[in-house]
Image (cartoon, rainbow, N blue to C red; front, side):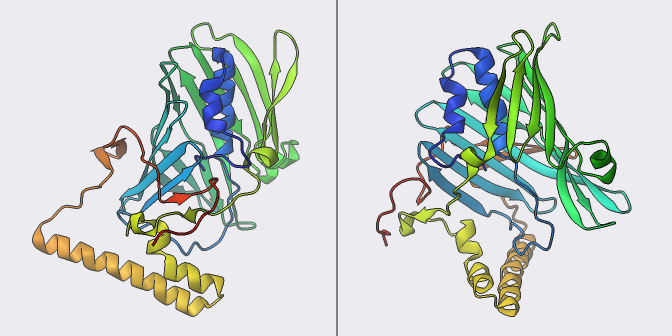
Length: 322
């Protein structure tokens, strides 16, 4: 999730902090807030080519687009109106089969620009492990690095695997460890520890002071679905529109009808592909420019800022405009 809940503007805090070290800690906090526990099982929704999600939450406007289907590549652009923050995010996957599990490398550039501060924060993403034996499950693991060249500061986070070996070592499920350092000297300034789905703490190595920098319950509890403010402005490619019939049948627990509706969405995509191939037409994303270099992808938004969306989260719920 790119946006915040319960009145906490985690993205805005990244720019509001006065000291560079405090801004980096806020970026770390925001980055951790985007993690969610993985529910293992069959997913009824496979994003289709050109599918979008355009939503606003407070001063944050977010636009995502599925810019490739084979392989699946998603692009995201988010802007904060008040704090002049710009986030771009390109995400794709490289799975490697390891017998009893699949190790998925989550690739792509994630960049936060604090335009008022003239600072850029570059972030990579953790790996996803999908396990089949001895019991099915999925979890995040691996390293996340956050670096800001302008402030000469960086953070390195390690999501500890919840394998049986790690649990035997005393590393509890969804634990996180890391550090904040000065890039040029390598001097470590803070130790980071905790659980990314609960609380994360930072210890100042100079003063010994320990502070809670992230509390999941306070930051992401009370999740609410978006409300349609203007139905006429909702794009046909909006996820809620594409999968509306599937969602309706799932809520009614009519699994057979849900499968039929999903097949209808997929058949429509296949027919569109056949028509493009027959006419020699290439599909082009509407909201992002996409560059592919071998197996690597890069996505850049076509517009400098994301406009207000017809779907909103935190604003007062009013009547739907037809």
